[in-house]
Image (cartoon, rainbow over the protein chains, first blue to last red):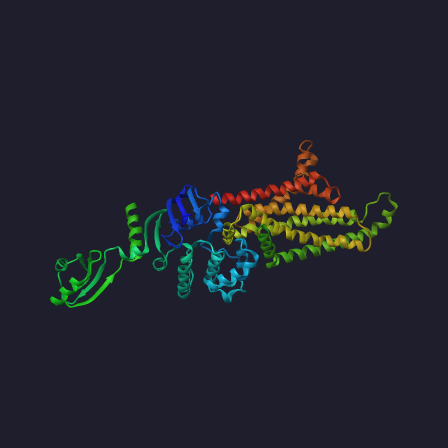
Length: 310
Length: 249
């Protein structure tokens, strides 16, 4: 048994003639959290609906823990918890009734249902909401009920479509830490618009645009591998060429008066710059490391593709 | 699994006032009709005694009562079935069932069975009226059984048709109106047969109340049973196929 839990191969999906996703391939190992990023309409939700068996793929294959979603849907879905974009809750049921029903639907034996319901209520912070009607709950609480529903049968694979929409910042942090802790034992696929969320919770990130994966990397590599840049502010006017002559500096660009953005080669450090500044009395008063954030990358990637398309 | 869905479906009906109101209205109206029929029967009784082979209390009170019940329910059943799938589509809660380890057949059968539980409650409450006749007289038990089974089959086919039309749309009103249209069409389809010489038998075979009529009279014909079972089976298969097809669109 390999530990690849989700295998997506050459997946395409058309709505009539409109192509929502084309030839996606990726895989997910046990214990990984994969972040799915993309602008609106990029095909994130479609991909998740196909993986969860809510939509049939036009082409390609999806297998969950070795079970093909089309050939053995029941075995595949048993390994799967899915939170769609809109939480699939019954507004006329109470939280307890609803979660019990979900537990039974996922074939949890009758005598373990109560324990499972208690566990997810505790995990999702729903202890106080048990007897309330779902229709009367706030959006954030409904979202939590949706997450609770997806993890009630302890599935190895969890698919969450924008799980933190509508949550306040504190709930948001709780849900993120919940997702992180789920990621220890489960494989999680997560889609979101919020880029910092991906950096905070995911092991790997995929940026998808117009139905194609345009970027794929681990978040760790994302935080390291790029050339580092510093924002430098000097009291004394200095010519950018003087900076360039220093050790380890690739190039420098002047921003406003006395400020520069200085790019270093990967893994170089700004010793030389500081030394030079002290010796020549440039009056260094600001030295801020700039990390290339996911946001920059996201905008750069989606934007450059757009202009390339024009 | 089918049972889990059926229980949820049955319970959900009673969470809204709709099911209670329907039960109350039908019971009141038919209770009144039952008493009226019974009154008429008392008036006729002295003349009936003189007849040979005279019709009994079942034929004169219960059969006409159930004829009216069938027509009222033809109008009411669309209101019960309209929400079954259309509402879940509108609320996007269908994906809960779709991503659970269930086959489409289990989902559809669960929904159907849930509504049939309600139908059983409804018909059983109606049957209390004929059963009350046992207090004063002896109705024809065989006929009553035939009436009971006939009502269940009739309402079962109403339910299956309603379920299918509910799976076609997100809009409950459209589901209700189209179900009502189809049921009405199946009822009146043989009205034209009086003026037609050929095609008569086909049209009257298709008529949904024609088959019901003979069961109300106590005639337990396999072709009637087959008609209803085929209708139920056919529309359930159509519903399953419709839901499967939607995943491809």
